[in-house]
Image (cartoon, rainbow, N blue to C red; front, top):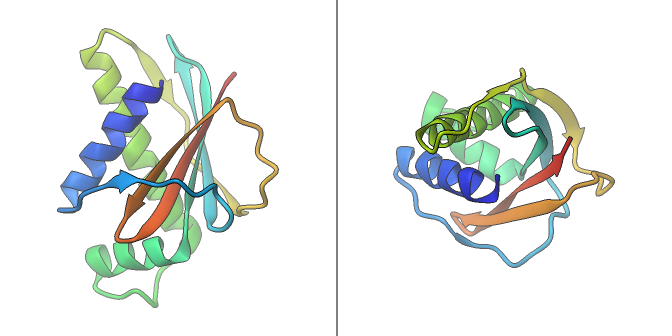
Amino acid sequence: MNTILKKAVENYIESIDGHIKECKARPHTGFVAKISTEGDLNYDIFIILPKTKLNYIAELWFGDKNNYDIADLTKEITNLIVGNGKIVAKKRGIQFNITIPEFLGEYNQKIEYDDILKFKFKNRCFYLLFKES
């Protein structure tokens, strides 16, 4: 799952004309959405996005960083990344479906996970945590 999600994030960031770097910091703040995969790979995936990252995407997509629904945008970004992961996996002969993203609110450091991917984009880190289910 690690390489699939890594490629999915790269594809997503490229779609908004960005470049990612590796982030060394641990997650400490942000908003969380959860999505699950079911099929050849069964995982719960949590994406943690800081408010500044959501503001950037809102301004890029809607032209306004002050007037958007945090829950909806967090879920949409999660859906786009993991949905792209589904396409990446299919090209590798791996099949899975994804659930509807669920907004979990602000990150509270109590999420259990097996692995983490950390990315830096526009000088802010965001995170994908995943746990085999």
